[in-house]
Length: 385
Length: 246
Ligand SMILES: Nc1ncnc2c1ncn2[C@@H]1O[C@H](COP(=O)(O)OP(=O)(O)O)[C@@H](O)[C@H]1O
Ligand SMILES: [Mg+2]
Image (cartoon, rainbow over all chains, first blue to last red; front, side):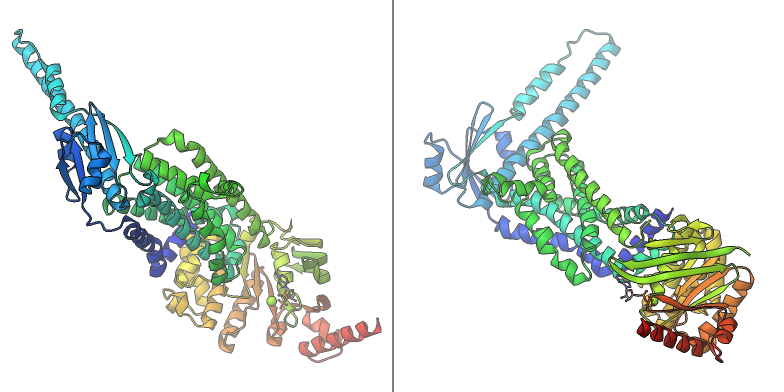
């Protein structure tokens, strides 16, 4: 009941504060777009891709306006062909093994090729699945017809499906990627995006919830609230649910934006991406509320950003943790964003499932729980029961 | 008559610093206790302790038969803080509703009580204005309306009359007297003598000690003076004389 009243109040205050709303919903998209343009490079680039012995269905699936395809038959090495013609990459097929060789001198071109290839594979899989279902349905119909007529026409459903598979080419290619320069980690935006997604959610939720509770402290309304029989837990849960709802909408917006505007493929489950972000938001919320205890003005709250928020991003995997100096590596284990961002990267880029990120998610939950308890304790300063 | 507030041998402070010493107080229902003293004397500290926001360092505080601090008991106290604690992006009505809900009031009670509480402070016509558009005095009145809202047994008002014009002040006092006649108990702090004169019981605090306490008439005759103000001045001089003797 009281928690509900708290939530209603948080909603009212938020909805009437257009600037904060903009900060919550538009600023993250702005920052992500900026990162996108900075690191994706020129998106109008077209990459030239040489293909050798590749199934025509695959080639058709790869084709898009950012890719020009050159079919080659020369049996020189991929390296030589790329060098001679200045291609961005070459794809060759041997059975159902695909070998992608990327020049990687321009990472944005490599990204275009890799994305197109990934998309093509997904597309083919989808088509096969769809046609399989269709053929099966047709076969079923034929079977029913046959049964109805009580004739002995042989039913050829399996053969049909087999033909179709041949027509579409293999469904599960194994792809190996080689780089002439650098490595797969050089595709910066793809690496950066899941991390940035986690970071913007963390940052803005931290800032907005922290400042909201701070304002409540400095105007005396928190003290006034505690002069009613409300439980400290009810105040905190009102904040968590109220701002949590806005954080959820923010997360949803960011995820949809990356999917539909940047056309980033999320290999794993989108629900898992949302779950990770919501957990990150919870950690940010509870941490923001806690940090606001140590600030006595909005300006002081801002001063905590370089201490609390910014360092997180360095330990979130932009620089691979294993390449950090040994003494610095353990620091990442106390950074909530490390757990959030590495789960995000795994889900977005590698498509791992819930069980694989569960340990990280549990740690995030633990962070939130610890901050929550600390919040309840610090509120004792205002009312000692 | 029942005892509503009982403070015994209270010592209170923040951290190591002691603010209040040897405070003893007994208030029955129907009393209006005026807590008077210069700013920094420790009035707000005493009020916070009586409400149970602070645990007594030493001594005991009992309110409505319950040892303080006690969270649930806060539902029976109407409180007005010294600084206006209001949500400025909400309207007055939304502020009243929110604090009422926090106090544990139902929708029906709110519907009935909001016109009553705002009527006393003349805010009926401005109920749907945003608090950020309110003047200082209007905010003070809204804070008072919030304290009155739940029709509490005990009203604790920290400097309720600051910034309120004389005419409205009279109206508010009329209401406070009516409530006291109904058996409600009122504790208010002030540094204005007119408020002190209206109280049925006075406690003068200076430098963290209660330098005089009793009904206004008793105090006036005890100090052989003509007004409450003179009592306060005389008690202050006595305290200083006492201190220099030590
Ligand atoms: N939260 C606090 N922490 C430390 N000292 C405080 C706090 N609140 C008040 N004080 C100190 O206690 C003394 C009494 O303050 P207060 O009770 O507010 O006086 P009054 O209400 O009579 O003006 C003052 O010296 C003030 O500085
Ligand atoms: Mg005071």
